[in-house]
Length: 281
Image 1 (cartoon, rainbow, N blue to C red):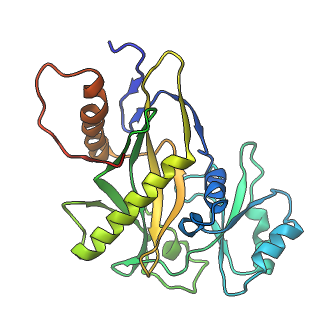
Image 2: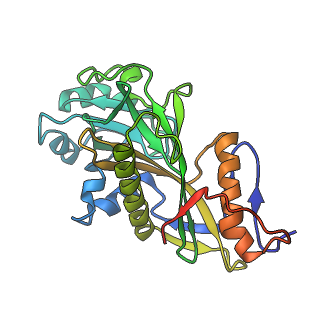
């Protein structure tokens, strides 16, 4: 019976009291990075797409550099559903019928990352977990997931989803401070350092507001990130209600209770520190 709290526990965890998270739209969040010349390096250039037909602005965008490849995706999509890739204007025009005209869908075209860091020859992205409070406290989970494509990476075969889509539900592994999954200590330290830097920056792009009855609120976010072959970090998107399995659910729940809830409502019995979260601010 905690007054002014909303705690829902199940297969996935939602512990939140926010009514506003400015920039939660995947398209708008990336745009906020692109507006700052010092932050553009963290994201790929992109453009919003009309659902009926491409405009001259879109065709000019995709035609600027023939060396580049592009990814087209629904802003409100998830699990890679609806995503497709194109190499030029002609291919975009041929595939434009794939853009569905659903009521709440917005679409975006982005420059594609075709030089990804690989894990055992597979393309991957990292689903990290990140907690922000209305007081400006930021925490990064010390455990995340590496999500893999089904097949080994081949750079030029852009029509094979099994090579490029890193959402295979059977191919994900736990990535943590205690298990680097084959990455060297040097590689892991670099990746963790870049993740911390990016997650700190994310806070500056999000404006948060609590319910009026609540003096402290917090939210678990799920940024998807990728590293290039040269070690540069890229933000792919920010999931405001990230799905998780029982393992990460329990892991984050313990961290949230110790770092946030227990500080507001001290437990009667002293708890052993679990170190599940790294405080960033």
